[in-house]
Length: 516
Image 1 (cartoon, one colour):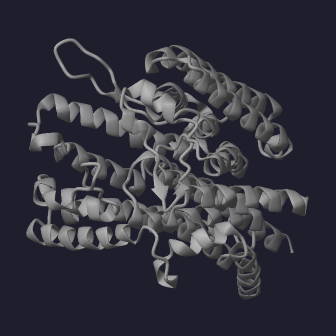
Image 2 (cartoon, one colour):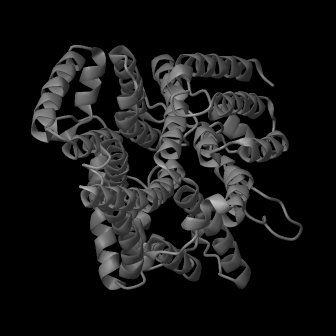
């Protein structure tokens, strides 16, 4: 272990410990003391293991039994999953197997899915507490349909020298297994184990706590021009590109353990969205403001335009769902205008303006032109292969390779349309639409009977819409995919328990009317 890794570990653990200490009173409003202490201790142990381990497999030797034990003890395994989601960078390492390139690739996401969520899903299937959540509904069917299409259609990886791999039955089984642990298990546990508002808020607060730690680290990375997790990813993968410093102008874009600044910005945008409903339980205005400022500090440090817009969209959609919406919107616009004016008086303000093309910014304007070229070419290819896409589309876009040697498809919908066609877009779009409708309708039905429950539902709705907006400017990778399926699961879960709450409230109202 080098001295540089030691310093990086010290900085990360000190910042993490400080945020855990300051955030404990907030977290204990939503989780039990036992769950909080266990989650904190596991986070610290896994952080130390990530930096100390000189290989991913040594990390696994510590992480697997610890994740399994903590998941079994936790009253909400999904909250534990969200807290630990980025305790280590998502560096993919292939499982070696004799006579083949590898069984499949593992990263921290898949470790958590296999050893926290899969056992939780098995408990949901047998525990009487979750008996009412086992029924299959339309969202489940649509996700399975998207999974079947994903398994049936083989998209060859974009390998150097235009090598095109051939599909096989083994590859299909591998794709099915990976879709199950990457998407289905995440969605299933979120949709079935979250059985009431308390568990929902516990999960939201656990995610916010983890991202608050990432925000403190992001501000440090941006200010000191130093990526703290890059060396860990490089050591685990043996890829020097894993420690690549992404710049925007002369400023470093923080990425912490998210894998990319865009993915990091997305996590901050969603955490800010969750905080909008959690802060209602916090009496201190200073605490509410401090957490919001910390998350926006992280957003600015990630230096990603899409998540900035996404965070604002989530905010305005959420406040538009509540009472006195016009007054709250006008007040919010005035506060934001004042904050933006103060920001402009700082060096950071000039950097923000410099990357916004619609106000004359010119820094990194080449990425905007590149995305326009990608969109044009993508539409051409989709028109030629409309129904099931063109799995060899990369071969037709070779002139759009960047300096890193990749074709950077930075629009999830374009990527789905390109490789899976209209059928793929329909499956993904209908699943997303049903998630939004389910949570919105259920939240709207509880506005009068239970305003607090209603606000929680509108918060999930706003974060879902914000995610769907941000997917216009990013690929479906890293935290984008994981949190999307969590949010979809929240929407399904909320629809289930809020509908029961609405029926109970309706029955009570009828009984009171009959008594009179």
